Image 1: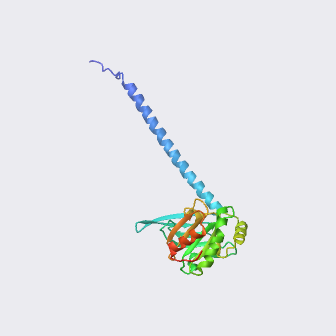
Image 2: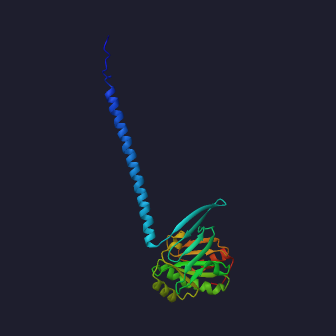
Image 3: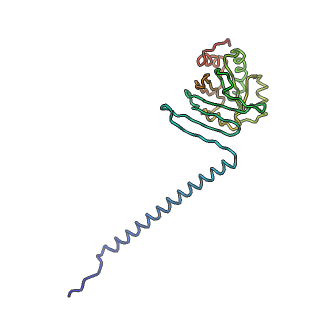
Length: 228
């Protein structure tokens, strides 16, 4: 009987070695993927823990409504707002701490009037320059349009001093951490928001407004005219 030759083909060892290397490579890839996933989960947990320790419960929820996007945000520092804060969107609710005092300024308390919301800060020279013009417009329009000055990312005392120095007498509030400012997409200062009685945002304007430009925007967006 002929003995069976059990020797392997010359290329068999090389094929086996290549297969082992491939399996080892796949194992390394799986280990690396698992490690990356664990690190991502750990980072997420650390981020949540930091937010909880800081007592900051900012949350953003998105929902599709009539083909658009409804943005809902709840911020810290006594600031809360809800709605789509883009131009053409609608702000459904807004609550800000008063700049002076312990109360709050609510959008619902504005008696369904158009609103000119102006962000200011003591470190913003253009804000300081335009604030007396907003006071003049406030006095000129009477009760046809509401005005609200919002101090953003500024020390309370410094903002109060600027409000007094510029002579504004309309309502003032504070956006201590700039949450509402960022919600409107604010990038530079000053920023002025023109809001219709139903909460629709007609314009988010960045930059200093002259007296004539402010009067023109109030007429354009609210149909209210006055003498500059």
